[in-house]
Length: 373
Image 1 (spheres, rainbow, N blue to C red):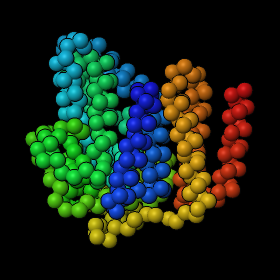
Image 2 (cartoon, rainbow, N blue to C red; image 1 turned 30 degrees about the vertical axis):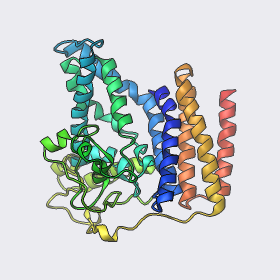
Image 3 (cartoon, one colour; image 1 turned 60 degrees about the horizontal axis):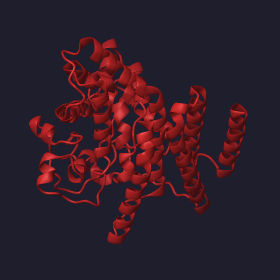
Image 4 (cartoon, rainbow, N blue to C red; image 1 turned 180 degrees about the vertical axis):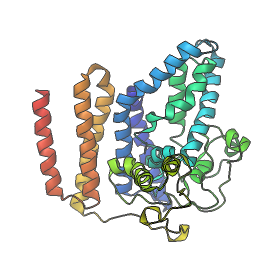
């Protein structure tokens, strides 16, 4: 998986460049440096965490397949691969839908929706905690006898397909929109408009949304983000904010039953006895949603660009050579990378001075050099 992402990275950025240039030419570019870097940082962080959690998902799937599969379908038949792609998309639909309808799963999925822009960098904005429970939804494939190698490849196909649909530069596509997940359909999914909220969950196919009543056509301008904005460029906090909020509300719930339901009910749910600041929910008006965009000086922007480019090259190399490296070395580089991503976010939002950031990074490089030596 790591090598596939490493190979796909140049393609991702080539398409990002094309989308940016097309947007500029049309006079409606929706790229901001801070937002794009934050989304890409979360994508890098997700891939690094995945180096340690991906084996869990595949391992559980393989164990279930080998012990309780009703039959073992042949991996060398084309129809098994087609079945695998469709079956995976069906399971993904329900995983995705629960990710919006249950607070615990939303706490993981929210990362992908936090950007207030909608472009190809948003596609790479991925959570780092989906491996905790996401594997549960794909066990029906193992029980039905879809081989682990087919499952692994179809997961990659589903993920890569969804990259191109995160754009505003492609309009409606006629009959294609009716049957497949498309830019128009997925723009609806990312929007916080009342008409669009919690709709269009399909990864590749739209037939599941039509079958289960969650399809809505794009008819009005989409407003992106979440109804409780993150207002931060911190990639670590982006992954933890909803978990922290749920933990706080669970702690302050009056009844044990409510302490559990806070995690299981839809996002924003509160018990009848809720009172106090912990349960306050401000009125949401899509027309007054403000954009988080703290100013950056020219020197800060240069630092962010140079630092992220260097980090991207290093991350791609690590993904490529990860299998041949010592586990401790991979862990050390992953932690260092996450630390640098956090520093970058802190500098972008003015929480950390540039001089302090450079000093911290110099110390980190020295420590890594000692560890490697």
